[in-house]
Image (cartoon, rainbow, N blue to C red; front, side, top):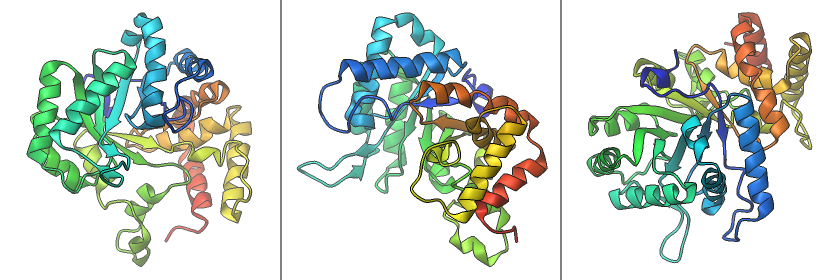
Length: 323
């Protein structure tokens, strides 16, 4: 059972990340093509039994949520078929300050109101705090969370890119359990695996993933979500100007396994991630309907992937043998 299910949240095993929808990263208005592209992505996801959607108030300057909301406004019956998650806490540079993080009560409440308006929704299933704010007052942030819960605007809460101490500090001020931590994890971003492998080894000093984070989330039934889970398409068909020797070998291994298992390359890349006992929930960032459908194969791949196949992909992507 996935940690979210333990919390009473019936989400799909995969999440469609919506950062790619909504046109350009500017204040230009949405176009019909922006909405059409979003609609095609949503249709492909639902057809593939992907019912959870990941947003953030900053994506495309708010236009990703707006495009999604246009679809919900036209098809209100879709809302109850979806689990919608969004994030807040990142603020872009403006005339008064540089780009910054903001977990103040006023900003969180204002951000959620803006998100709900753009999404044409009455509530969020999950709200994540996007990146750690060094000036966070845990009790002030907890007041915002409590108010959002009581008002019915948000049903569940989580974080993104936080270490165990940061999660624990915030949780200490909350009556409401934190249910998600969204982190960068993929076959190309291996620190989350390396951190555990390098215990009592000098090479561990090179790892940027927080010590004990994976285990902390597992122990506290916090759903691990993986952003960047498709490795930017590096092993599933996207053309890169140049790949390293280990990247090329990993690409070839992914292709070989996909052929042997009669599945997609996306299925192998995500299946490897989902094979881990932490029940990681990938956030897929592609906007291609075809690739969205290909990702659904990952559920079966994860169930069937052998220990030897998992380690073969891991060691290949590392580019060196295990210690």
